[in-house]
Structure formats: structure tokens, C-alpha cells
Image 1 (cartoon, rainbow, N blue to C red):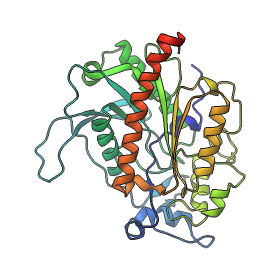
Image 2: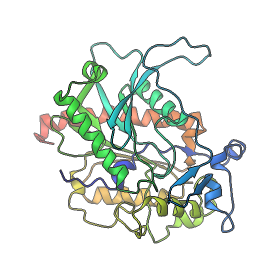
Image 3: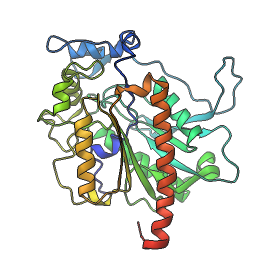
Image 4: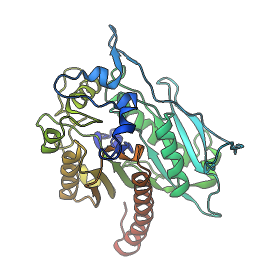
Length: 355
């Protein structure tokens, strides 16, 4: 089947952000986030990656991984267990899988929305098993509450785009097959999942119904520099040379940053209006914020209902370091999921929507 999973799908990767002012010490101690200066900085050194002769990368300082916790465990520290998780195969040929999260104590006799999650890392770094993304999904599952499916997609440059977008389609088709009971249905999804409330993007997935698209600091690019990219050229998390390198590694060979996989402002837009209600979040100190605002305006111009949440106090990766910013993210997701369901009910009753 044909689809248009351009940056608007995988960019909902709930990419984590950071505040500069109070977090300089924390950032300096993080190998992957060490401040450098432009233009003398080496983006490979900044990202702690080394190119290999065959075009692959050696990732020198991968984030610590966490295993799934499919059953309640004896917790030896002060942090209470709030969710369970397990890994499920997606596409064995591509070596992809899904990490499924569920609340430890879901509300009784209640079906939960399903959130399909794509981790950050510029399509080049990290994993669904990485500590911050695992913990974010864990908390989101418990606090929304929701079932969260985190996709272990293929990374570039070993697998350049659209490989990650193809893995996103695989995940959507997997959810559809679960709803249809093709080759059975996972017990957590069967017991708790509401397939009429899936949050990602509009696609023919009957009987699955996509109720919303959540874009937390979506990763967009383009050839023409924006004001925020120029102003924040020396950003401590994603300085301009690093951003350029990530896109060079992720895009198809020979493509520039005005490729449709990178820049949502180019290419055909006739299907954009089919997107469901969208939440777009960003921070004023993020070099990517101008592109996020531009994308939000474009979606609204195409008739998409957009909820915009921009906080001027914050930079890229704020939720990774700042518990207050993390709580804000979880609250925004919970509110959006709840209000999207209320809006959907209103549409069905009052507008006779067939969406």
C-alpha cells in the first residue's frame, strides 16, 4: 500500500530536550552532549561516532540500555514500579522490534489508548531500549494512562531513509493486524487496548482508528537557514554542524536537506489535510523551533486541527534533564489524548464525521 510517511510521522519521536541556564554542569558530564564551538568543532567527535570504510558508523558512547520488565519485580530502590514492559518482534528480516509498555495498575474496566512512539536521535543514534526513552515511555504509560509501543527502527547511515519510515509503516500494519486478530493478538493489547484511539497519523488501517499525531520537538530540516538555527549556531545540544551531519548521514545518498524526508515545506501537500488532530511542542531555545512553528502554520493552513505548545524557557533535550519539563510533557500528552477522544465523540455525534 502507498503512504506518505514523511518527517511528520517519525518526527513525533518524543525527542527529549534541555534547559541551558541551569543544566550546564549536567550537559558537560554527558559524553554525547558535550558543548563544542562552531566552526572549529568536529561533529563526529561531538556525537562520539566514527565513520568506517564500509559507510557504517562505530557509535563510541551508546546510551545505557534497560531491559524490559514484563512482570512485577522486587524493587530495591526508592523508585516505585509504575509500568510493565516487554519486547515483541516486528520484522525479523530488518531486525526490528517493539517495546510495549502498560500501566502496572490500569484503571479497572477501562480500555486504554495506544501511543506509537519513535525515539529521538536524528535517525542515527540511540534505541528504544536506551535509558531515557525507556523511562519516558514507562512514565507516559502510567500517567496518561495508555499502552505505549516504542519502535526499534533501523538507524542511518547503515539504513538510510526511508528505512526508518518503512519501519514505522511496519509498526502501523502490526497494530492493524493485532486489531484484526491476524495470527492472534498480544494479551496486553487484547485486554487493555482501544484500537479506536491510536495516536500517530491518518492511514487506512481499519479497524484501527488514528485519533491524533503527537510531535514533541519534531526533527525537521531544510537548506535555507532559519533565524533560530543562525542564532543558536553554537547550541550545546545540537549545534548547526551536528544538525547538518545528522541529515547528511540519514538522507538518501546525494539528497540535500530540501528532500521531502527532511523538509515538510516541500513536495506535494494534497494529503496533508487528511492528518488527524496534531499536538506540536517545542522550546524557544531549540535551534529547530522555527521549523516546528513553520510546520504548525502549514498544517493549520491545510485544514488540520493543531494544538500548539511552545515554551520560550527551554532548549533541545529539556525533558531529559529537567523533571519539571518532563512533567509538562506528560501532562500535555495526557490532556491531548483525553481531549482528542472528547473531540472525536463530538465529531461523531454532531458532525457525523466518517474520519
